[in-house]
Image 1 (cartoon, rainbow, N blue to C red):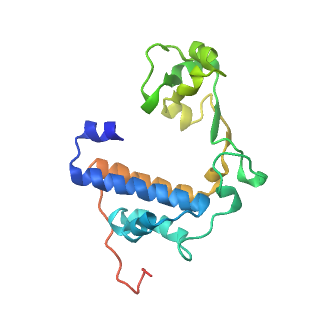
Image 2 (cartoon, rainbow, N blue to C red):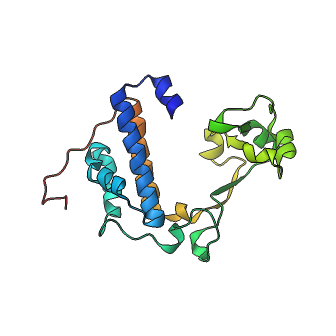
Length: 202
């Protein structure tokens, strides 16, 4: 995020706005998965009108049912780990299957922060060298998101995913709020006017 802010040369006001928007996304996810809604999250939620556009307000507002929000279902409490509810997906966050030649095109080895490691110019030899080793724990395999592969599903298979992705309302809410972050970075964000108390706001 620091690299993005620097590259776009955004001012301190936008930097602060984006930081709060990201915190709100974290709070929504945290509450939905573990009912952990702390004081800082409470404050952000009350100020959400200045952090989200009108088009993005609808979905997070549906999450707010009682005090503070709808309790998370059992399968939403654990993103990774063993789940005894098979309807909730798997204990894997996301698993993709690629042919080896496509994996070589899309996947690269990175260190901290997603920076490519120059010593691993080819993914497959690096994978064979690093898998199931202590050295491998300090590296990540990251994927280049190409539209023809992920939008149209060419030669790729989504094998499994966490139950978190089955929460359609949460995913829709996070997508809308993430678009607001993008809008703020590009100078296109317009906050939603806070409704008059007694009408739409508790």
